[in-house]
Structure formats: structure tokens, C-alpha cells
Image 1 (cartoon, one colour):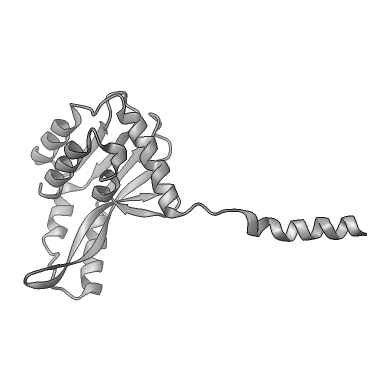
Image 2: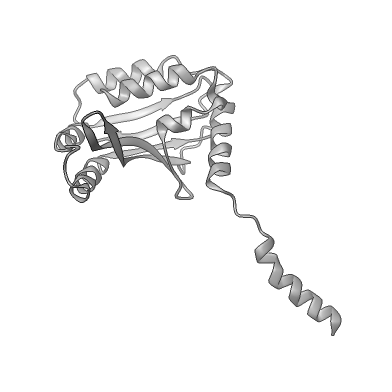
Amino acid sequence: MKLRNLILLLLLLLPSCRKEMSETDYFRIQRQKVAAALASGLSEDFPTDLADAIDSGEETLEIDFCLDRGGQVRFLGEMELAAFLSRAEKLDGTLPEEQYRSLLDDAAACIHVGMYYDGQTTSPAATLSLQVRRLRDHFGEFLAYELTFRFRNGSVIGVRHFFESDDFRPYRQQLLDLITSLEHA
């Protein structure tokens, strides 16, 4: 009888002993995976391949490039570029937030790009998306958007913020410069 009560008590306590992974820990692990792939070096081809694709004027932008030289971190998918640009033109930072979100969701629907690890292309580790940001400058508060990673577990982080980590120290400036150029393309 005592053994049975002890087992029941242990079964009741087990769920509370499990430690849920915090979002911070999750992002740290994701950064480490990408940083490990970048140990082989940042791909020299992808920034120009991507810029050339954007400048080509194609209606739909086919995206297939590797972030690292070893081909372990790959971005794959497509972006309905003409539709995205048309929808993004309607985004005015002074609009009411609900209307801005609706227009941003329409623009984000044009992006179908995943980030894959370990050279795999079966299930993306994260997808690219857009998220509303509230910003302030000397003229006041306004709405803007940022490019984000949406990971499989539902966590969302800005692409810029993801790469600002010290995990990417040797390549951080190149990555941030690239992100800036994509934001202003």
C-alpha cells in the first residue's frame, strides 16, 4: 500500500518536474545550429544571386540559396514579388493598427520561403514572415514591419535580431548589411 502511494505521488509530481524550454533557450539552440554551419564560411554566391534575382524584374522570385559554404543552411521557396510590392505600397505607417495588420498579412501571404538545416528540404526549421512593429522617431509613433523567422514551435524572432547574436561574430556585419540591403530592395 505504501509503495502504491509513493508511485502515485511520483506520477503526480513528474509533470511539474519537466522543464519547458524557454523561448530564449530555443533561439540559442537555433542560433548555434546556424552558427555551426557558418563555421565553413559565409557563402559568397548567395548575396549576389539574391540581388540579381530581385533586380531581374521577375513576377515570381524563385529562392534557392545556401547561407554557408557547406550548404547546411538553405533558404528555399518563392516570393510573389510583383504582388508583394504592389501590396507593400499600401502600407502607410500612420494607418490604424488593425488596417495596417490586415494589409501586412496580405503582403506576407506572398512570401513562401523556408529556412532548412543540415541540407534537408523536407520540413523547414523556420519560415520567413512579416510582423508589425511600433516605432517612434522625432515626428512621433508609427507602424512599420520587420522580416521575421517563424520557427516550428511557433516562436517568432526578427531576422535582424536573430543574427545580432555573438554566435555570428565573424559574419555578423556581413549578415546585417545583407539584411539591410534586402529591407531596402
